[in-house]
Image (cartoon, rainbow, N blue to C red; front, side, top):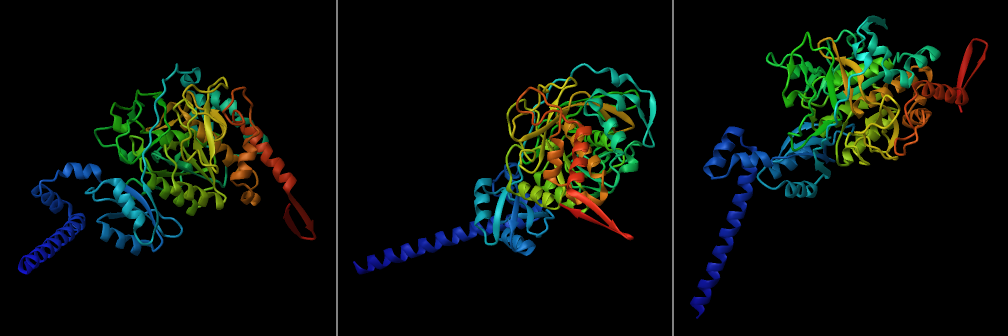
Length: 497
């Protein structure tokens, strides 16, 4: 009996250590495979009978904040078998983009991240999309191609006298207050800008391409020799599990006689950044334009690249950040980045989205972003525009907007993407009104000035349709009431009340 008991105990102990050994081996194999070069890892997975394609499809990106910085996140990934892709560039040096190995479920991996020592937050590098809207009949001004001079550049007359520009009263504001955006930088987080566009080039400042981690911010790098020139504007399908999509509803290229047309979904948002830049330039022709490329020519981009772009814009002295894109879900780190910008007196403007519903999207849905909806050329709500107040603060023309396009041509745009830069350009005019007191212009004071708009009867479109003249006038009135200058002998003193 005693021998039998001893044998049972020995068998139980042996099974325990075998199970423990197997558990340790599984953990080591997961970590080891994640740290192995891709080619070796693929071979190991194939030999083990595991589908490499399924692992690759399950590999997910996360935005992780580690209080210990780079050394801390490197240690975490060495334990969890993940890969640190890059730093996001936050002022604390704590925010990183991490990619899982794909060997375990993303939800389980997120739980492991949040349980790791030093990690104080983690979230998916999220995805989002916007449905398209139909293109309407091209307006009369699209055919007015008479060349006229506009602040040193030859432009189509239709670009200047188009109905959307007349609605917001750009020319009246420029003339009455002698403003043109001088001394102000507008950062455009978008698909990049054509650096060779003769209208925009004199105003471009150095930007960055976050999709390739290269200097410049050009969107022309998305094209190859087999894809010349122009995209037909068909909406981009969401083709990434971790991406956001720009708020381009529809685009029509005006002059295709000298350029090729590419009918491929991966180029369906090509030109979007050049278009939004052209609208800012229309309103504030002397403002500097900072192209920050966070989206590919398909209109798809990672939230982490948007975060990097926001921090870059602030650190490189942009006064306005124009954001014609959306994410469907709220994000702690996106809110943190926008808050960082607003604490530095940077004004953030975002598009409300094109799903024709009372839907809140981000970053425009954040309380410190000026959320912009779209209206028609008759000051009625656009059929595709999101609405709801809050978060919508203001509306602006977003239908048949004629603007610049790559390869020295023009395009018509429909969507809240093209309403947003009208507001961004207006803020640039406000900023150039009195450079000495530019620090008084912040998210709150800019929003209050913009609220002096053209009212419309429909509910959910903020304070109505943008009136650039009234907004600049309201800002001028604010300065006259809150800033006094007293002079004695040869010196003057400015007092802010």
